[in-house]
Length: 407
Image 1: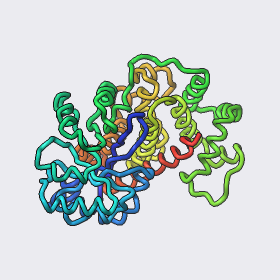
Image 2 (image 1 turned 45 degrees about the horizontal axis):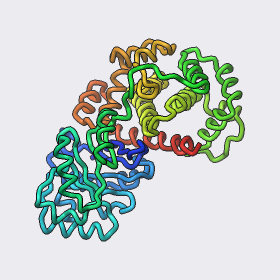
Image 3 (image 1 turned 180 degrees about the vertical axis):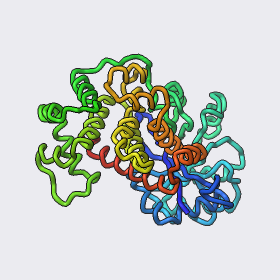
């Protein structure tokens, strides 16, 4: 049996990463045949592969995990570390004495408790003393309902988390309403649809990004540009010596780094660093998502049997969020970049193999398991291989982000 595990970011009011909710396939089609969501959660948590891979999925951040009533009563969360996991009580759970006792026990063991998709009912009063976080679906609960809920719960020191936040307008409204955390992909969309003015340093990085996008990239020209930029040289050296690569000997100079990486890896790294520079003042999770998606697309190309197209797939994944990074229409940006026609077709016209690989990556990261299965079958890609590839992509992105965020 294999497990689909995706993640959705949870940001704080400063748009910094607070945690991830881990989302998994729990009973559809062939993933978990003929078992309940509760049993699916049990099998997931008991999986040694999952237990050992939480940090790789979350980069050391908190992991929100849904637990149904039986799983909570049976103390299933205790199989996972209390400093890592937030026990998310599903909205389908019925508040009763057994549940209260179970949550009391979990709380005494140091677990953080959250109520998912919460809608007020007096029956939950007995549970509130053990709760830390209230999650509210802002697509379901209106302004008046949210204000009324806050009034009823004013005697409790809950943190409030807004779910399904898909636009910056919703994020701003949630901030005004006093929400502490925000879950959704609002940060991955342009804040304003107009070209953002770039500073001289960003313009230089944009030029470098455009240069590395060329099929006939001039390696010597790119290397010379890197050598003239101390910051970029430093980032390159930090990266090749990071945990993304398993090296026994440290690389100590730029020439060694360039030789070690080779043209394709150098092209990929420069694209990532340039995109990171362009995403200055944007949520760090936006760049992490871009890198994860790029790496995942690269893996999918190899799995599909198109290894030669892996660099294109990487760039397709990375560029799929460039509109949010640069706050401009995607077509406007790509018209200024000398990308190959198949990458352009994938991003703008949604056609070609690269478009399918990107769609598979996006459906997986959004935990749209039905769509994931549909595309995987069309491409004749084994669904059983996807979890490991996604885990590697998140680990790779985390390794890059670790040193990049230290700057």
